[in-house]
Image (cartoon, rainbow, N blue to C red; front, side, top):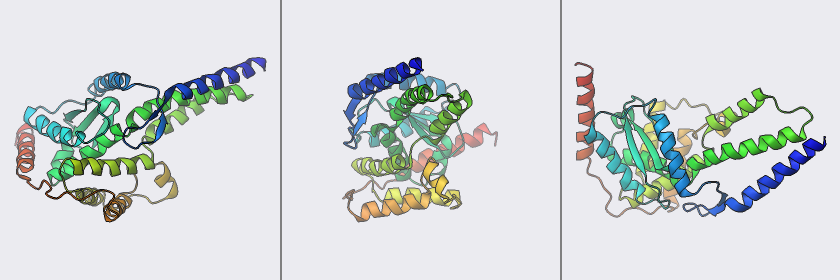
Length: 282
């Protein structure tokens, strides 16, 4: 029992020291948060994660399309407060998807470019991923895993029957699979729309983007309480409604002369379609 009491004391002291040494202001939201890593450390971790991702995903074999996606990505990232070296990767996977990782590593699937209907929609999705980085959501996932380990140590030390390894694995799996919280997803929508507007696009493109996503899912997302609380993204109709309310309240100002030229986007999309036909031997 003395050993357990010592463990509780040690872990709590470590937790207090960690919290005292790692508080910082979020550059995007302005909130005060626990930080375990400096920007330089985050970028280094992001590079390691990128290398792991490329063991599973392959870059799309067309530098013109890669350059185009990166150009749109950097355009919206320019408006982000958090100035990590954002890097955009166009990957050879036929799904409507994009995701961001610590250090500004952002992956865009070819299926996304094939599906969006305009450059503003592509820009909105990239801005959403940039917002996850700029709001420190990505590095926060990594930091949470580290602090979870500390919490598990406390739970283990105060219990007469330590948590089983299976329970620990399941708790960690929930924390990893859940990814961003509902609040974080709404935050990324909000600041993503702000970055979109700063890049010269119509902020109302956020509404059109979410409406497209709603159409793609067929509005079949479950509305049960547990799914809403623990699912990775909020139900798409909720995101559409939040985007409309955000603009109606004037939280994000309209752009006087928004970017509307879709000619280059259409050229890139046609190039992708031609590439895919050629690769399929058609």
